[in-house]
Image (cartoon, rainbow, N blue to C red):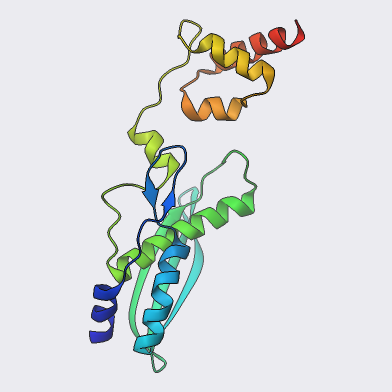
Length: 184
């Protein structure tokens, strides 16, 4: 247990990644592992991480388990869970599972090594949830600019939807106006 406490005290896993959309810093699972590997070696500990697909109701979760061993004996273990998104733009099903695995592993590592991520969340989804995106309507100041940029191909519909709340009717209208502008 002294070795675990020592590593918890020594571990430095800074938030060196930057989210370009939200402008905040975060750390990835890989960042944590990179900081941990030399400490584990120094203290003679072996760490493994395994994933398990768990069905709860009609949703699937990835359960990641971090196991710390010394001389072949388990001395510490922790789990983290992350739910697979039903759909995520631009990702196929294996990428969605991979993303959930990375998050679950990161949360399991955070628990075992006492890494606190509560000061700032590190996902685009969290930022969108916490900071409500403005609505984009035909009455909005930015409507005409969005139509123009969409028509020129300077921006994609997916990018517009990342930055604005857009009803289905307004999305259709925006696409229609952009098409007309592009043809004219």
